[in-house]
Length: 230
Image (cartoon, rainbow, N blue to C red; front, side, top):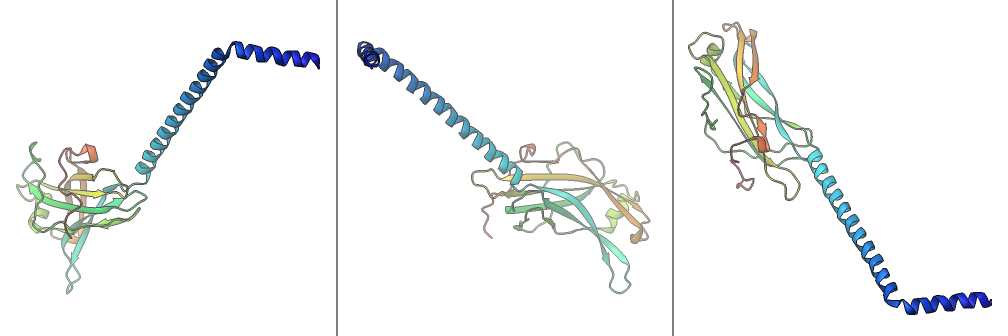
């Protein structure tokens, strides 16, 4: 018991004699713990931020032209195909719906390949129509008619040799603070078969070397803001 009392007294004397050193060491320990805690907190915040961005990228709406569908025009009296329409199929591959989406599609024949300075204008009148594409859903654009002279063009029966279709879609996703999105495309069309029998025509399209991309791959400015009056 005497030895224990002596040890306690010695410890007390040591602490009193080195009070400044003990305080300094304690301060250093607290500072180290505070810095470590701050770094851990920052790391967790960054991890949460990275995970949040990854979740948005995975779940946000992403719209692209999945296909173009040829639609036959059938004469009600004869039941025969008398013309063809083309409709772009826009697909949302995301897990959330679009917001304030607008899209336009244009089509025009050309005597040769598109010039390098072609700016892909919107052809045809009418106002932009607001669209909604749900998660994993599809929607068709308003069909565009292929005129008879264009069919002759593509069948090699005219001096005009090429047909191009181009368009764009602009939309928001559901998340706050994310930028407005844009997707654009351009296809070159070919038609083969018997031009005297529209039922025997086959349609095929290929990507043009320009005007195909999404978001920062699109060099042209947005044409809509998403705040247009309905």
